[in-house]
Amino acid sequence: MDESLPVGGVIRKMWTVEAGRYREHLLRLDADSRRNRFGGDVSDEFLASYAALAPNIDTVIHGFFVNGTMRGAAELRPIGAPMAREAEAAFSIEQPWQSHGVGSALLARTLLAARNRGITSLHMACLADNERMQQLARKFDAELRFDFGSTVGEVATPHPTPMSVAREIVADSHGFATALLDVQSRLLRPA
Ligand SMILES: CC(C)(COP(=O)(O)OP(=O)(O)OC[C@H]1O[C@@H](n2cnc3c(N)ncnc32)[C@H](O)[C@@H]1OP(=O)(O)O)[C@@H](O)C(=O)NCCC(=O)NCCS
Image 1: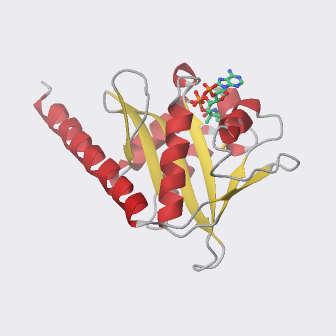
Image 2 (image 1 turned 180 degrees about the vertical axis):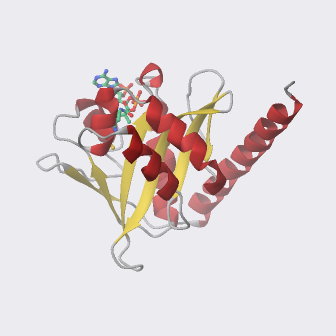
Image 3 (image 1 turned 135 degrees about the vertical axis):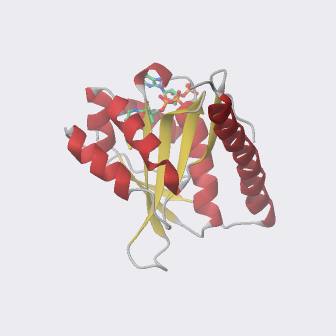
């Protein structure tokens, strides 16, 4: 997949056992990023509970990892009835890694995952004054339809094809190798 990421960074799907890493990432968000991500001020306790509940079987979370630490995340969460084909997407990137193309790469992965799950309508919970998120969405004009009149954008994702499914499998196999290396290097690190 064509992604230009900061040196040493990788994007891969998060495993459900990695809820702790997700919590640490959310707790490192600065006040503005927290507000933009959650639509208001939220406490550390809220973030801890959220991170524990967020990874579930229906939710796809892509993480941006640098040296094994999660520095960014994109959630794709189905909403409504199981066959409703609607989902919500939300992004969080820690301040030092913002404006380096990570959000663009995470949105590309999220759109691919949405497409392969038959999701036709993707809502992005985004505050009306969040210029950067709106700029980011505009970059994907060809793949999504956005209404900036409201705080929620609508994305029209095309149908899955064998090629789009293959692209996700290839991206996942790279991510799997990286995750294993990550675990190995932590096991080999002196205590
Ligand atoms: C919003 C967010 C996801 C964007 O991710 P990012 O990695 O910073 O964005 P990118 O570097 O991929 O840039 C995407 C586009 O935004 C625009 N952009 C980048 N930095 C910007 C800035 N400081 N101000 C305004 N627009 C900016 C550019 O158009 C850029 O595209 P380009 O570099 O090709 O010109 C990220 O900044 C973030 O997590 N913010 C805090 C939480 C949040 O706002 N979440 C969104 C609500 S769910």
